[in-house]
Amino acid sequence: MIEGWSSSHASRVNGEVADIARGFEQSRSRGQVNFRGELAAKHGLLMLYGDPGGFVGVDEKGRVFDVNGDWVATEAQEGSAAYWLALGKLKHMEGFEGLAPAKPSAVPVCPQCGGRGYIAENPRAYCSVCLGHGWINASIDVTELFGPPIDAASWTENVKTMVSKATPKN
Image (cartoon, rainbow, N blue to C red; front, side, top):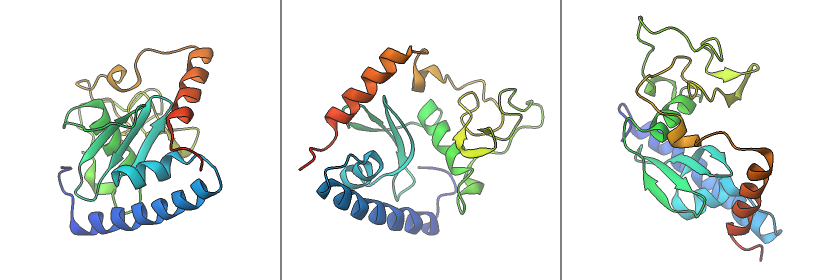
């Protein structure tokens, strides 16, 4: 569980997950794929990150889950890249800001994002180097989460596979 998680965090996640799950049912009835909604409906998770390889989400108890491309959710351990990514994303969400650790004074800001934690002045496009923190935690291996860089054809194939594994459109 994320250190500092409170009942107000739980209540907020519960409310957002319920709203998202309702939206999922509506989009599903229209034959649309909605990964964020499916994650909420299937696992009770608020999606913090998603790409063709999987998702990272948090539940009402403050537990972080890594959901793979086959929709299998595994609780992420503190110190893992998925856990660190979740804290970095929560840092930029209203009401959750205090859950991420502060930057140690001896650690420089991230050279990729200049310490913002996100790219191009867009808080939704957070930095893939520091995972949203604005500084690099040397003990986190980001390739654990993202793997080695892939070419465009592989990425496209991953997207097609992910869509094919989503809930049927009926």
